[in-house]
Image (cartoon, rainbow, N blue to C red):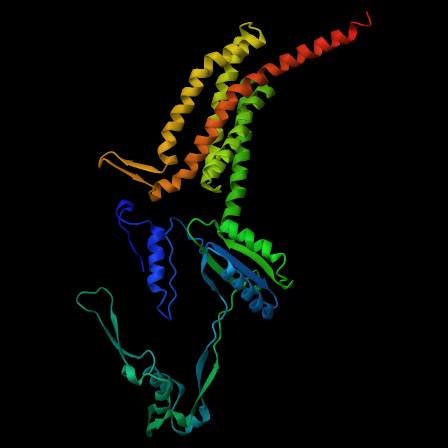
Length: 426
């Protein structure tokens, strides 16, 4: 059942609506209610997905039951399910062909008669005036006569008249055959669950991993975490490679433009400082680190924060070429570029504040909304850029001038020490 909700300002939060639906359907027997928010892009399934693989099928069921019991005992975990075959029976109708031949009956005739009790016998088609597709016309018994006892009363039309099928058909009950799933050549059973609103699936996965160390699981099984955990691992690997490539390309460009490995290193120090700022911002706000949006924010931030260092070092290099002393060039660089650096940072941060606080402003309708779904999606990226840029800018104005003056100060210190050590000998 697909529910389309009103705008966020005209209804309670989605989490409250879902809790109310669960409460109203909890007393209904025979159904399972599973609620989830429709997500853009390909679905990854439930938040927690545990795949149990083994080449020894008999060890799968007890292992799966252990994991299910663990999930049921964890707080904040719901919608638990597994792919274990459900208990049940299926009825098999075995036709004695030799006996059926005595009555001039065959298997096809028996099958058509049995359909009267099950899905019905198709006798034609028609298309209503208000429909585009044809509709099957099927004949079957009334609802009260569609039961197991009626199977024994069926009669099949033969050249010798109506013959009860019980004369040559035996009905047997057999265990229901479940569906066999395989992965990488091994039998697999999955145990899945969703997490409650505000609970990170990664935290529950980490809790399960800790439990596995003392759970005494059968060594013939292989446990693989799929779903969001698998997708986050893939995204993490991709973003790490993208970040490394971005830093490498920036370093190459800086070295070729400044013709100095040291100056290129100073510029890239802002990237490390901004990353520290992102982590501190998440700690202050109490938000988790999202692999996708926060990771993209860190990569985008790397291209922003280096601009401040480029401005400082370029000004310093120009003053040094003009013949100015090192310390004086450092001081003048800081004084000249303080206002541009601060203005750039402040305007960028203030521009991101609506996304940081999840404020959605509609200028046409003159309406302001807080916590809409679109703003929630972009908030982690805005938090990364805002906090990282603020932290890196403050440190850039202090650390970068110090590092620019460090080589000259080191040379001066070493020269003084050499003269001090040479003085007694003279």
